[in-house]
Amino acid sequence: MTSNSLSREALQAIALEALTQVAPDLAEETIPPDADLREAYDLDSMDLLNWINALHKRLGVDIPEQDYPRLASLGAAADYLHRATRAG
Amino acid sequence: MTQVFRMPSLGADMEAGTLIEWTRQPGERLARGDTIAVIETQKGAIEVEVFQDAVMGRPLIGIGDKVPVGAPMAELEPAGPTVQASGTTAAPPSERQGPSGPAAGDKLKDHPAQSGSQPEPPAKSPPPPDATPAATHQRASPAARRLAAQQGIDLATLIGSGPGGAVILADIQAASPQPETAPAPARQPTHARPDLAAMREAIAAAMSRAKREIPHYYLAHDLDLSDAVHWLRRRNAARPPGQRLLMGVLFIKAVALALHDFRELNGFDRDGRFEPAAGIHVGTAIAIRGGGLVAPAIHDADQLDLDALMTRLRDLVARVRSGGLRAAELSDPTVTVSSLGERGVDRLYGVIYPPQVAIVGFGTPRPRAWVVEQSVQARTVVTATLAADHRHSDGHRGALFLARVAAHLQEPQAL
Image (cartoon, rainbow over the protein chains, first blue to last red):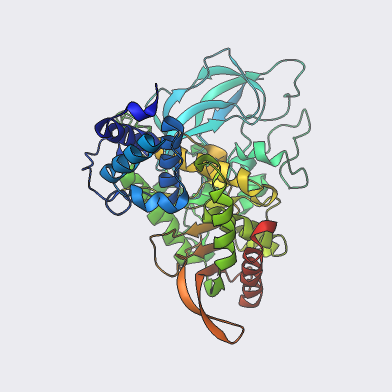
């Protein structure tokens, strides 16, 4: 399956799934798509890096360090991944 | 002969642990370092290891039982005729006391020079509790010592009310479990989340002891982190996310390397006497969402390259989040490093985790006006701090140490 066939909604679901894998203590939370993950859920640098890594592995998307701020929320991540997978 | 595996002490603040599961069934073989059980402590679910080859024997407690440190958990049978096991006790009190839990013996084998790491000669019976070297770390009356040994209470966990802070019989009685009362109802253990209320109590106990007993002195040093930031950025740009490094790893390595020449900051206070540690095992403070923190050790951090350190840190954070820290990691840090990360404030004044003698803090790196060769520039600056035990080191040496840490961070490629 190529990742460029995935809808934005599917990508947002993948982003959430990857997040709860690297931060299982957030599994019971209901995370609004626009919530700032670092501010509202106390994601630290390691959590963020692990999440980015999980998305990279799952979708094959290259996410350089300077783009991390563009994945500040689940919704923003879905937008970013949607663009990146279509472009790829 | 049959020996007894006992509830290990995983730090000065641990009083008891709850059995979550046996990872071996009676009759199964255990190699030194294998996990025998998972216990729940204030710090979450912890895997505990045996520190000699053995065969799992009869369990002495059940799933859900909460028992004090030192209490018998299971019988261990000798591993077999080819294995030297005749004289070594399953859990000699000298290795159970204090911060070096039984699992620490597994680490100690790499450092044969460290006292207490030598295997006991065969045919020697286990020493009486009041004659073990570790028992002298905490001042205590002989009667208190005997009762503590019987009850399996780690003297190092107690604050004595006797003369000079000595532990007396009444202290042990106050700390003793009440065997006649019904055992606490088995809680449903959660691997995912440590008991935050219990962790808060544990932190309170350890930090109260630190502030009561340890004469801290504090130093702070602003240092230019720009070169390290640029080096890290360039390095990470060329790598996939799984191979990128965090600045915190550079901090840990710089501290570990600097400690080579400042051994008085790496080790333990033993009843007012300094015991240097052979290895540099950096306790790495990891905050837990919802409150609390743990500081498991990265063993021999000075020997690891940055990639290996990053792998270890990544693994530790994952296991803090999901449960499954190992006993040795919690019981034997020789120093602590605490970094506030990207969303913190300028500086951190640490409180030493007893019986360690130093904690190094890093504030949040941020751009500041900085003088470089007679001109003011915007540079990324971080404030490194040291809180150290004034009984064992002085500000002069502490200052030289922080300057050494700063020097290492000026040459990130050499870390």
